Each structure stands twice: as C-alpha cells, then as structure tokens.
Length: 458
Image (cartoon, rainbow, N blue to C red; front, side):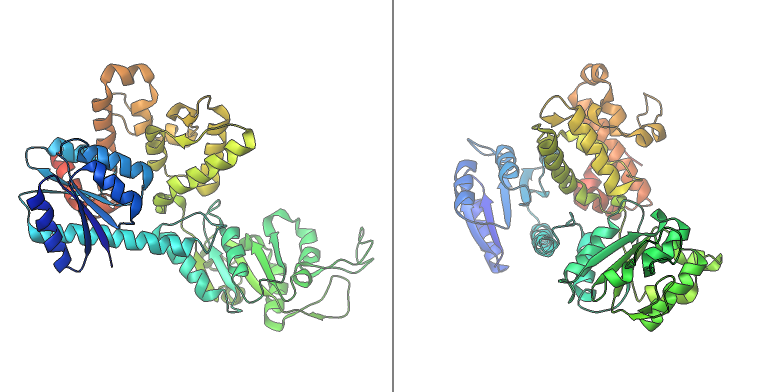
C-alpha cells in the first residue's frame, strides 16, 4: 500500500487530508511540524510527503531541504496559500515535485498525488531493472526499455544488430546480452571491424593455417573459432568490404568456417551480435552492404539512444565518473555545482557518454576544490555554438561564466535568466507544446504554466 506522510501545523488540515487519502486507499501518517516529520521519516519508509510551507519552527522549505539531502528521490508536494507564490516557485526550484494551492480542489489533490506516487513506483521499477545491469549506468525510461529488451532476447540464440551513435555504449549492451544469455559461461569475443587492415580481416575472422601467407608462422584461430559455443561481437560491421561480407554471410548460413589456406571446414555454434553507427539500410541502397547479410544480422534490431535523448541519466553518470576519477587521481571531488550541472543538462553531447566521461575526467583533473564549477568544464563545441550576444545569453554557461558579471547582476537575476533559457529551449524543442516542454524539464504542467506566465514567455 502506498504510504504518505502529511505535515501541517493545523490539525483540521491534517485530519481532512488523512480522511480523504484513506478513502483513496493510501496509508497515511501525520506530523504537526517539520521536526516530527523528520523523526517519522527516520523510522518509516514513505512514498510521498505532503507538507505545508508555512509552519512554526522548521517550516516546509527547511523540511524539503532536509528530505532532499537524505532521500533525493522521495517526491515532496508543498501546500501553499495564494499569497505565497514565490515560496512555491522556490520550492519547485529546490526539488519539490509540485505544489497545491489553498483553498483546495479535491480533484486537483488526487491528480497531483497520483502523478507523484506513479513517479515513485516508476523509479522503483527502473532501479530494480537497472540493478540487473550494473555494467550500464541508466535509469531513464529509454534505458529501461533497452534493459527489458535485453531480458527478452538474451535467452534466445537470435542474432542481434545494435544501432547507435559513437560513444553510446553499444559494446556494453552486447556484453549485457551475453551475460544474460544461456551461453554466459562461454566466451564473449569482440572485434572492431574498422581497426583491422583489409588484408588481415579474413584471417582475424576465420583464422589461418601455417604458411598460408607471408608471416603466417603458425596456425591461428579466428574470431568464430574462439567464440565457438559463445558470442562473437562485431563492432562497426558497416566497415566490412564486400568480399568479407560474402564470406561472413556463408558463416551465418552454414555455421562453418574455413581458415585462410586451409582445406577443411570447421563447424561453429556462435551467436552473432553486430553493431554499427551507420544506417545500414542506406548503405544497402548505395550498394555498399549486402541486403541478405543485413537480414541475417538484424534478426533482432536494437537501438541504443544517444545521451541527448536520455538526459535524466546525466546526473547518475556524472556521479559514477566523479567517483571513478577522484579515486584514480587521488582527489576528493565529490560533486558538481548546480550551475555546472545545468551546463551539462543543456548540452547535447555529440560524443555521447564517452564525451561526458572525458569532460568529467578533465574537470576532476583541473578542479582545485571538492566541487566542480562551470569554469572547470571543457565544452568546446557547446561554446562555439552558443557564442551569442552578452545581452541575450544563449546558454546557462554564458550566464555564469563571467564571475564578475555574476556578482554584479546578483543571484536572483542570474537564476531567472537561466530559468528562462531552459523554458525557451524546452518550448522550442517541443514545438511550443507546454505538456511536452514540462516533460522535457521534468516539472509539472502547472509549474511550467506558472513560469511561462511569470516570465511572459510567448
């Protein structure tokens, strides 16, 4: 049963919400102030906190801050009076899931709570699935879909073709498929097709016998013999020459290989996982890739999304890489400043996860404090694409990059400018759909509507 903690210094309000939510099937605990709420949170597990903002002693904003420090994923809905919209905006900026205005509309309360608790359940499910794939960092909806697909296809012998831009982690996905397969105890043998010279590719794939060519001083097993009864991973499959494509097709059709210079064929039982950053359908149309080979490889096609399509995973990846490189460099860089994180969240990462890792590695190496600041981030393509007027900043990086200007303008002005940049960017990307923009920004529709009105954004 979903458990909710209601915090309000008015007993009548606590009783009202408890009766209402009990009728909706929720388990409800109440607290008259922030201090008692924290005590209950320390003893019990809750799926949602609903708290008034104005309370004696520890108010709702202080309680929100404490909750986000201890349980960042726990959704908090704030109760606010019409007279305190600034407090509601501040709460949203500091991690509140949404806010409810007094006097209450019961249907609105139910809707907000349903959204908040659904998000909690979705997060729990995502974490549960993600925990089964420790080699891949991600809990976004996009990655959960990938994990679910891996779970379905891994136990089968079907060949898999993984699509994805460079740096998205295609080999990690291939390894995960192998690890969850029925041949996980056998070998996983990778080869990068573009890294092997053309005159050596046949030998690397199929092996050779001693004396078959100059330099063949002994017999050599190829990829398919080494991966027999296991998994062969062919990265950048689109780089294979037509001759090798023809010979690879025979392996897939006949399940047998003949080493270079050999006379005997060898039977192999190999699961093939291939990967490419090219659109093979276009390569087929251009005559550079065999259509029959494509269908043999792409029994199950699987697309790994670029990082710009799963921005929700950026904080997880940042945390992982911060720990990795802090340990490697013997430093204690433990976190990313909020402004630096905003820079990353607004960046498109053309190099994907690999680029983010390089950014964090450089940031940890350059940073003298224990927190990465915007000036320690090196985003060359980001700067070149957004080098607009100082009066009309195009990115949060430009807003905060000049330290003197930052202090001249003041925190509130800079934060407002940053918020407007994100709102405009989300509206532009969503085709001015406020519902989609709210989803991109991971805020409620009501919150987006309020901000659009506040800043008079058309």
